[in-house]
Amino acid sequence: MKRPKTYFEFIDRFLITSNAYQIPTLMVFSKSDTYLEEELLEIETIRKIYTNLGIKCLLISCYKKKDISKISDLIKNKTTLFSGNSGVGKSTIINCLNAKLNLKTQSVSKITNKGRHTTTFAQMYDIDKNTRVIDSPGIKGFGLVDIKKNEIYRYFPELLEASKNCRFKNCIHIDEPECEVKKRLVSGEISSYRYESYFNLIHDKK
Image 1 (cartoon, one colour):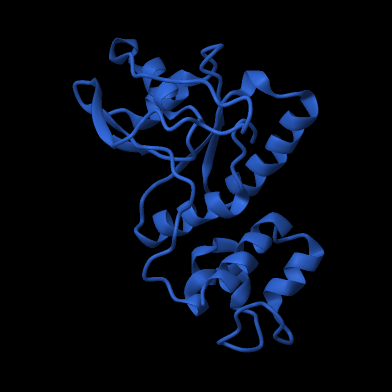
Image 2 (cartoon, one colour):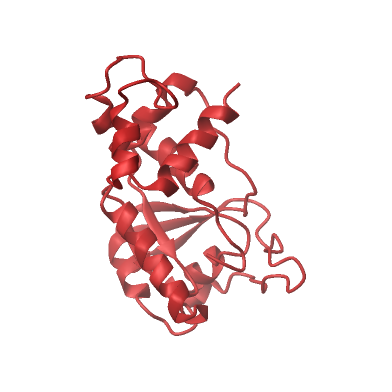
């Protein structure tokens, strides 16, 4: 959530793609030891939004070794890709999972509050005999491929569910009349954070 900040739209682009290709996804809030009490409350609100959508969320601290074992249990006997903005702590987490790897890491820039692109290419590492992780370079943007503008809502589970009760079958939930998505947005059943991501994605698709 800070140093570097990851935006909702960035997260939702990942989730849309993993949903489209049926890839199980875990959301990790790293660096929990750096947050103030009010920031932790904000993170808890965000966690509830995504947990209610079936996305497992963990709040961890590599510095304090908090809940690293939960990641170990979830990725056991699998091959897992770690992805996200530069500086969020992907390589640091992998070092916590297997200290023998000793991957190179750097602190976030104090000037820009962004990562320094320490990892420059994707590489797979063995955590144990049957568990592997892929450390990927930090990325600034994540585009949607082969998903049409009028299909984006299908990859937002809460929008897809609400859309069944829209007046028009081709409703894209922007300004159509009797739109169930907009009704649930007003009532608070659909998160304004998530809808804003959807709205921005719709207008980004020319």
